[in-house]
Image 1 (cartoon, rainbow, N blue to C red):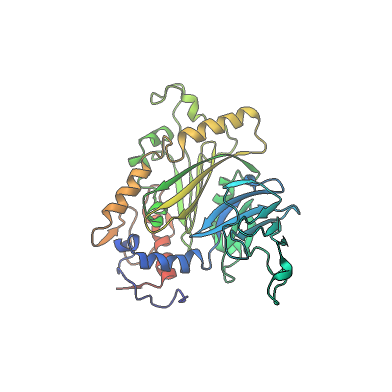
Image 2 (cartoon, helix red, strand yellow):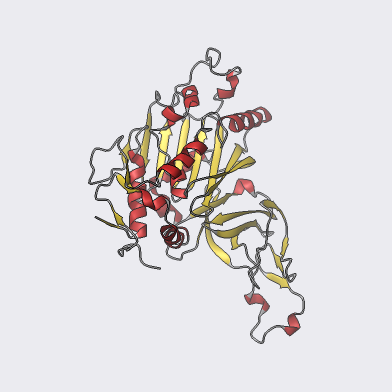
Length: 394
């Protein structure tokens, strides 16, 4: 793999920092480089939260880039991340999206692995090659770490420690995970968007009150807030939501849907973790959006919804109702996203560059502090992407 600071001949980048070439969304050769340099490079990828797999034997499957991975809460209490492939002939080991299992058996040749990934046995081992050693054929483990219950995995030994990787976005991430990470899964909504993965993650603060009419319920544009980015392109939003009187609002038949019952003072917190994960807390909704590319023009997103371990039954029911109606692929405040993602994918097959405008005050340098509804908060992420990919400016 070429080092990111070397010039990549695939593309010449525009000179202005607020311009992005449209062809990055629609070229297979660039996508293959992204898999190598970003998804399989020195980046941490959120693959699970402890709240999804709280008990020994619990597991879930997901992808890093196009690589299938298996996240297992071992019988010894440790959570590990594995390549989801048999160490024998590479057969996909676990096909279920989640469940509880203390052993994993490959159906092809019946090789059996325990929850630590160790090979427990295989048929006819006496006939195996002279160099075969059972202890050398466990399921390959992937380097992982934990932060506020979030399980991160990386395929590179060069990835920095998690605190360095997150930087200042660690604070909104922690706030978005209930303040202490003591959360449990309510359920998922899953969707496959017709767009390149970068179009999905390129959402900005500018569009929210303009595209999503239901954001009027949350007075997104009227509330005070802060948006900032790190040098790795992570974005943090911490915003006030100046809510209308629930009994006087006229947009909903039942205004209790937008009740804010939480004890914290932040109405909205977003942590966008590059390359492609989002943690969102609007009102009382705790939402982790696990996403991964499914080829050049497809992006799969798993919207996971959570409650806090201190919640009573009434609060849990409130979170379920609010989450299922407000967020997600068909939520009141985000139902339009799928159409826009597809239209951006189609429209960007025209020549030229896309140009960011709102909040751009210097076309030669990116900033790191922005207004709540600026689109310029995305530019540090694009600059980091350009350097990861080794694209030289014109």
